[in-house]
Length: 421
Image 1 (cartoon, one colour):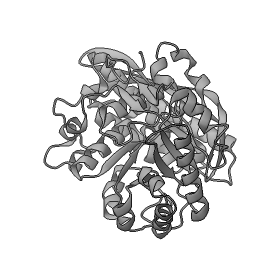
Image 2: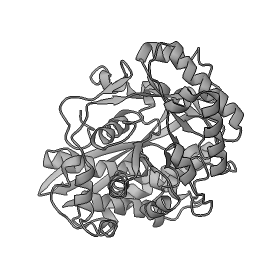
Image 3: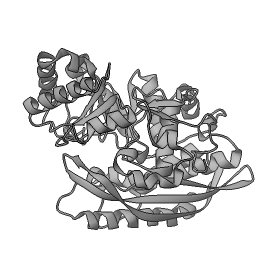
């Protein structure tokens, strides 16, 4: 059991090497929030760290407010969480329970004007959750993924696992770590492939490609998918893999089905290379509900932004989603519980990214290493903010700079969540 002693957060701005275009706009720079949390566990004290990009355009796509205004609100929320953690979460609790309570504190208990949506609030709580787990592992001298071997009461999550409890369910989904993860390259909607994708493939050997598409123009999206697939073949890749992300821009499940049908008719090989689709429609899946079963018969479709808290798990299954696109930016604890729940309900899991650098990239790599994700892990910072990783080079060059299309983790699993490796 762990007790929070203190918490703090610091910020620094990171500029993108190349803009990242979402359906909601273009990201050129972001604030990196780094949390430090001091805990006591079994009479030993440790300070852990966690980090996240405060990606307001993704988590809070409100065009009535400037990036600067939203960024300031998110920084303020992080600072409030740091102040309130030792005041409100002073019980001795399992790190998983502490992390879920951090999520609840960030999402429900700290009033702000203007008021960020739940996804943005969860994002602000996530570096503190990561720091708690990092500190717990450091204090016990073990990986944070080894904290689930002993049964502990998890009041916030045990009801999702009536037969085993949350700790046992999480332990069951954690696997022996794999030390190699496929590297994914993001292809923007307007990228000139000869100037972006082709040099990246030649330098790093990328074989896996995530395509940003319009979601509103199936003809153009099919043409772009085929173009990227064929360009990958031209670079002598034998079996390129593709995923599709419209960032919620599709109007309906029917439009996604039409895209798949058009793609198969246009180029069956490109269709076969398509691994899955991320959250094609609006993130409020209760208000904007679709039946995904016909799409899922063709290709897996994963809920991403729509999974904002654990209460959405059953709703995503009811709507016929194939699985969950997990992100560390929604909270390490929520991610682990969602992964365990997905496993018990025969749903797929992937690990997506927020272009997170440094210790946040290490965190994402460790999650992808320890969980049975279908894509390994997206680690996009080497593409978009490589300078933010400089302090880890050349020490962790094999992880931070993919080679032969692969990120390689150190052979020794680090204590905590890797903030000290």
